[in-house]
Amino acid sequence: MPRQHILGLLRGGDRRSIGQSGRVASIVSKNPKLFSELMAGLWSGDLLVRMRAADAAEKVTRAHPEYLKPHKLGLLRLLSTAEQQELRWHLAAMVPRLSLTAKERSVAVTALNGYLDDRSSIVKTYALHGLADLAQTAPDLRPAVVETLREATRSGTPAMKARARKLLLRLTPI
Image 1: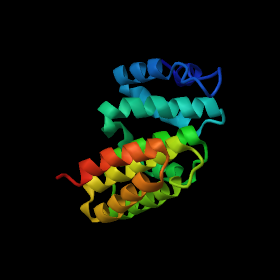
Image 2: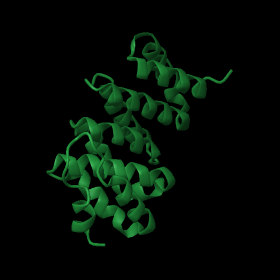
Image 3: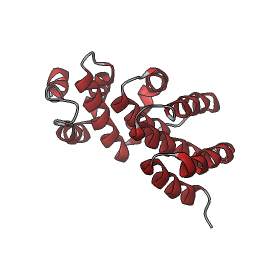
Image 4: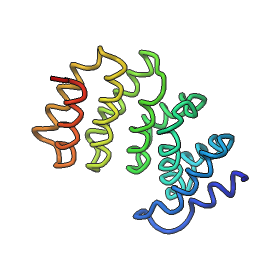
């Protein structure tokens, strides 16, 4: 299936709909050669294509995080520069799936900490989850992330409080 068709399936409608991103994720999961073409949608000039490409890529990489490897540097840059909330929350979920160097992890942590100031509660909640995921593979991050999660249980939105409590259990087992 050509690139235009994959990204074409993601066009139209409005921001309240994920459109056909589930279908695109299924197509790409069955034909991994299309993953790079899907990833190109994260830089589309069409905000609906961007958000739906991010949604589909995030779904695909739950089972196949290795597909992200060739896109690592672009994803880290995008994590640091993205302004669209739907793109941010999917990036917050995907970037921790990468194998990161200490310097790259620092870039990701800085960006995710910045996301905690986003207007969107969903972005903030995904940022907490992303930080916790990074802390699981980098124990040196745990103390700061645990403190961030504890603060979120005290002053976050209801969604942030609930997610932070669950993430704390994962990072600080009894």
